[in-house]
Amino acid sequence: MELALPSDILAGYTSPAQRARVATEAWAEENAFCVECSGETLKPEPRNTKAIDFRCPRCDAPFQLKSRSSSISGRINDAAYSAMRHSIENDRTPNLFVLRYEREAWSVRDLIVIPRFAFPLSAIECRKPLAPTAQRKGWVGCNILLDKIPEDARIPVVRAGIAESRAKVRRRYAELRGLSRLDVAKRGWTLDVLRIVRELGRERFALGDVYARAEELAKLHPKNRHVNDKIRQQLQVLRDMRLVRFVGKGEYEMAHAGGAVSG
Image 1 (spheres, rainbow, N blue to C red):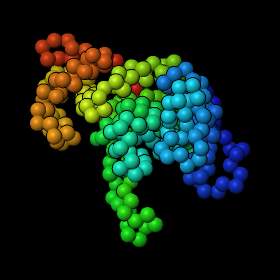
Image 2 (image 1 turned 90 degrees about the horizontal axis):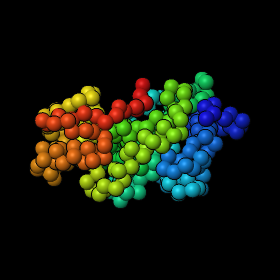
Image 3 (image 1 turned 180 degrees about the vertical axis):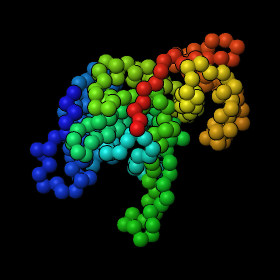
C-alpha cells in the first residue's frame, strides 16, 4: 500500500481543505480495498452522492471517507442528524474509513474502518441548529463520537504509518459480522455493552463490573426498565459471537484484544 498522498493533481487548488479532500479521495481510489469481500479496489461514486463516496465493484458494499490532520479520536462532523439516525435505524449506514494524514510529509499516517453495522445511536451527537442568519438556517447536523463506538469496531488499516495486511483487516471485520445479523432495533444494546466491556480495560471481568455501568446504559436506553436483565442477555449475545467467553461464577474474559488507532 502506497502511503504518500498524490500532489501532481492539486494544481489549481489553493484551499488546504480542498487540497486534502482531493488528495485523500484520489489516494483512496488507488489504495483502499473492500473489507466485506476480496475486492482489491473501490470505485468512486458520482460527485455529490449523499453519504457514499465509494462502492466495491464486486459486492456493491458502500464506503464513506472522512479525512483529518488531527488524531483519530473525539468527534467527526457528519451530515444531517435526521439522515444519519434514519440510516442507522434502517440499516443503511456505509462502512466508514477515517483517515489521518500528515501535512508536512503529505502522507497517510493512520486509517481505520468502522463496519457499517457498528454504529449505535449513542455514537451520534446532535449539533445545534444553524443560526437564523445562516444560509441553511435551522439545519441540524451531527457528529460521530468515535469513543462511543466499540474498540473492536475501529479496525486499523494503517497504524502509525505502517499498513496492516489486508487479510488481517478482513479477518477483524469478519469477527464482527455477526452484528449485521442482529435485529437493528436491538443491535445498539449489543454495541453499547461491548463498548463498556472494552472500557473496563481488563481481559477478565465480572458481571458486577458491567452492572456498575447500568445507570449509563439506562440513560442510553430509557425505554428499558430491566437494565441488568438486558446486560446479562447482551453478554450472552457477545458470547455467542465469540467476542467474550463465560468462565463461570459470573465471570467473563475477552476472546481477543482490541486494536483501535488513537493518539
